[in-house]
Image 1 (cartoon, rainbow, N blue to C red):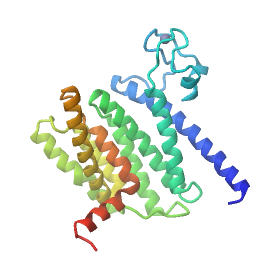
Image 2 (cartoon, rainbow, N blue to C red; image 1 turned 135 degrees about the vertical axis):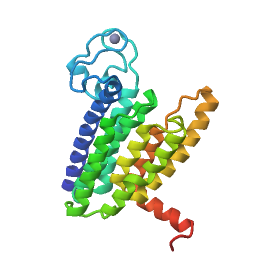
Image 3 (tube, rainbow, N blue to C red; image 1 turned 60 degrees about the vertical axis):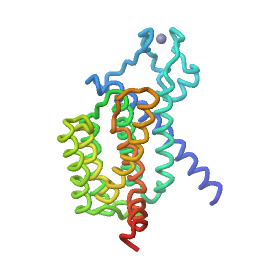
Image 4 (cartoon, helix red, strand yellow; image 1 turned 60 degrees about the horizontal axis):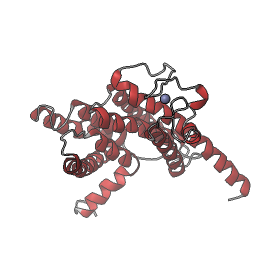
Length: 271
Ligand SMILES: [Zn+2]
């Protein structure tokens, strides 16, 4: 690769990272305000300890937290590193997704997967904190699924990623969500919430049936392990499945079909 191309690529990835941490900052606002049904665009942020309004120049994602060494400018109290971690995570994921899909060849797929991962970060942390999954976020995931179908149907990317067709997405919408609905009704909402049902329906539109089944398996396995660890360490029964389902959806948005094929081959269904 010539030096000029390398420099160009590095500059593009720096911009993608900066864009990613800015969106990450908005994700923090969503995670904090959606459960309280507060406005997402109201601009003022306050210190959780002293209530001082955080100045505009202290609201730069990641960098402000690093410059202030994780402390509030007015009272010096520690600001949770979680905000900075979520911003960095979103920025790093955007860079990795754009590298994986190549921003020159499949930018539309890359943008849709980035937005999906951001929505899943909100589901992960909000469900972890409150045992709630926002219907707005699930609706957003469903819309991304429809846009991803249109990308597939009209081959909009220069390099076309051929994944789930319309039939697979429609079956995917019902496949896991119906199972979860039965579990939810049978357990009267104790084993599974209605939010989990809607989440897997919306995810099915994006992933198609094979990948959404793989996502569900990853969710079940990681969720069961996490459930056992949480029960052993805290003794609490407060546990949400949404974070683990979103982890499965995130992995399978990229590798779902490969994982499903690997499993089917391993189980002897295909050769
Ligand atoms: Zn303060």
